[in-house]
Image (tube, rainbow, N blue to C red):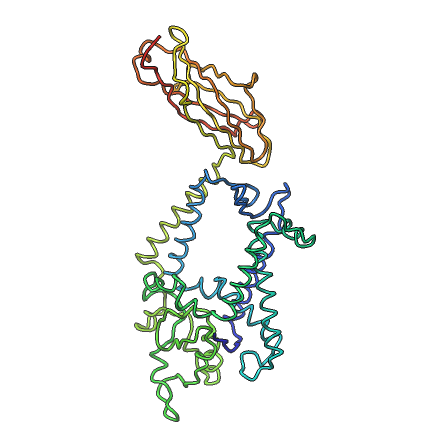
Length: 441
């Protein structure tokens, strides 16, 4: 495990601000309750609901989840091609919590933190604090699934009957403690899949933490000095993954910028600009001053990301908080009840995916809208009151007076419509076939 030396500077200050914001979002979000009494963010797996920003989504809306995941993946591709491993250095939980653990380590041990001669009692205290931090962070992670207020109530009353999350909480606490306390940079170098394909996403124009080898090399060798690099090795000492950025792009580099802050301090003593900063390889090799932001890979990734985000926003903007599933009743065949009236039974499932009670009316008409079908249900008024999150399975009878021409067809296409009586904007239409029986009465 590597415990790097702390360093201050412009990049470190900016990273502190970004990390503080991300941590605040992570810890506060599970506790936010919307004005309607709904959760801000919660993935309720037992109820199969994802609560987000005042709405909840169900597995039947998988296209929205798919678009969200695709957005995150394409964002990683797009921003990596532009500005390198910005995710690793600025937003990755592995990086953020490494800094958090180091903060508490230095808070307890001071300058002795990470030193072999640190007092054993202090080291023990640091590990106790790390376990508490792991427990606190794991509690909030699980709160996104189990509910923060429910978990808090269970812990304060010590009531864990029929609850499985305490075991999951224990597992994540131990896993996080071992990861942040012992694994650390080994995960970034050997286990993180992103580290493996980052070089494919980046090119010579990507804006990333880079060493200016043209100015720095050859480095100072004892008193002999040719390049600007004075061989202070501070960039190596402050690196949280223990790499030497002067050796070029490496899998272990997370682009945290600590080496840049350290080099800035050293070069300031020489009255020279830093050798390590946000550059593109092309800027160093060719001496170009401007970054080539627009190039084939950024255009491709950017265009795909724009398409996916636009589609996702369209789906969210036009989303109707009602799910309707229909299937023909296989137990009873369609039939003619007289010379022209065709009857068929359908099973209809109504799922209210809003937080309000819905009064739903079922109607049906032909595709051209000229003829309305008779809809017979177990409800005389044909209006169903469905509470938030409830599902109603209903068998309905559809009757239509068909023409002689339609009798010669295999089926008559019709439209089944479910409408919220108090809010007509909430309506779902399903095009279904009304089958013509093989043996006509």
